[in-house]
Image (cartoon, rainbow, N blue to C red):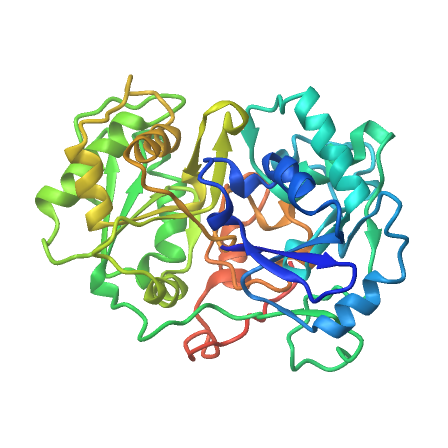
Length: 421
């Protein structure tokens, strides 16, 4: 996912900036570290900073007209509002008594900050560096920071900021629309080009593995189950790494080694998932058409650790980690390894790639949590690739409602339709 910035000038057409080109700082994608640069470079001759994603479509005249309704001399935070219907782990159970009261922007529709608010944020960040260790859901965390425990501005809803498809009905008023389909850059990759590794352990062989077999296993041509116990009925492969209660770094690095040394040398892609991950292999085939396996690619849902103080980004494991063969080769050649078998595998891998100067690639279509942990409006314009966790849900129903291949899914560029749970 690419984040695009429009700087709206007082008397000129907007200037377009690409965040990945603005700053080599590891945490530039979290946006707040860039406030100082925005304030210094644009506060004198511009009125708004507008952010959007690479698939956001913008009608410039309508956008400028919408922004003119708001007093640019005041602190405004504009966007299309999302809210949680129930408290969720990805937002640290914030506003647990009534999560609907706090609103945060849907980045796909675009969102804007007035220059006075940009200057305020830049000053605050200069005097009080960011303290949070983890970046998990950027849109929610930015809104919390701007809200400043009630002393800062709330999100103001702008009806012209939309996530409807460009050709959907009732979009004549929209300044922004969104591409509600999977990216497609060529022929979907073949199933035989994707090796799927499922991390499991003996205590979950009886409940989690049957769910995989009832749901998405049939989508995968090359799939193996890696455990601490060899059970022929599944079958599982004992990697010789003891099971741990927390991180599974030792097991994951053993899988990476096995992929290079025992899978067909021509298989370009490796996907590592948990035994309680639900994933659509057919949609992943389409998404991977946009990536070159001869380049070092690590793809999934991006989190951040310690980005305000020289930390790193990583792909969170529950939603699935996708590696090109080249990425695996470079990682293992680097000798960067786990500091213990129970270290968090996804974070160690992120740290290793950061040290190699290889950025991880974010896709919002991978999900570390369950569908109910995300706002309905947010998921409504997605074609999700994965969800994670079986806790308090029927995982089979979730798979067939959200992820199972349908005829329309198999057509190039198809939109996502789903049943309500």
